[in-house]
Length: 338
Image (cartoon, rainbow, N blue to C red; front, side, top):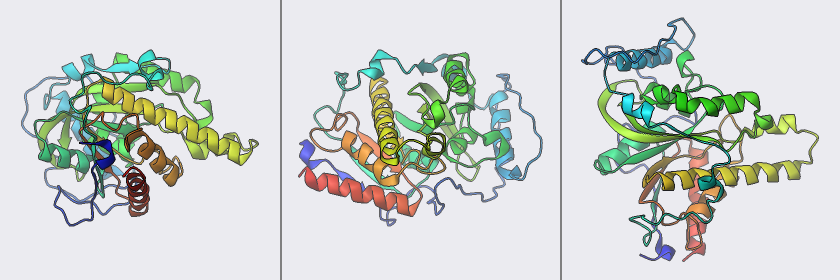
């Protein structure tokens, strides 16, 4: 298949997929489920993560997070392999710095462009949908990470993208591992005024154990790449004396480089079926159209560096305005390459 005929599917809501979402960006379904708080049957294996129960105004989501950790500590799934296989990639990792040249030599799909789906789904929904469609494929998720806190604020009931992943899976155990510590130490020492660094964590053998509502599901494994987007809102405040055009160009350049490294790391780790998203267009206030253009330039067309690096890509974007912008940009990119 020629790159000029790269397949882009725009989800119009008529297709069936697990638990369709009507939430906006950063929101998650909070329907009560009788299975939310009752831990499933499991053996007794304690992996030692202890958290404070406490109280908060977001008690429901907090309870889901705490019972997920409790169930895993009690042996719901084995996280030993995930902890041992957690990898930290520094901003100076040559494999990622040289992403322009580091094409995969063993890609099954190097002669075929990716199939791209832009869908009104949460990350969890998109992952379950891709798993249901390709149950034997290895899946990988991009985690829009807090640069300083493993899992973001999920233990306090926060409800952004990273928190939804953390409370629905075993990811927290990987992010709290010894291997992941340099990532958080680096950003705690210097947040670069909201630009953060190109450091990343790659976690394998992460078990997804809940849906967005908090109901237990049959566990299945995914990879998770943890990376922070540029906090554009913070950068604009910190560097308010910088000419606006100059600052916006810097934000775009940093995000373009970061997204390229994200894709390069997925490629390097052998992940071929991805669940992505707009990345940083919510509370971090990156420009939606700019982010869509960056993703499109890297993934679409014969000259795109990663056009043939992956098999299936789902852009899980629950917010309608953001999703429509991505659809428009990718549609335009596809027409230009025909």
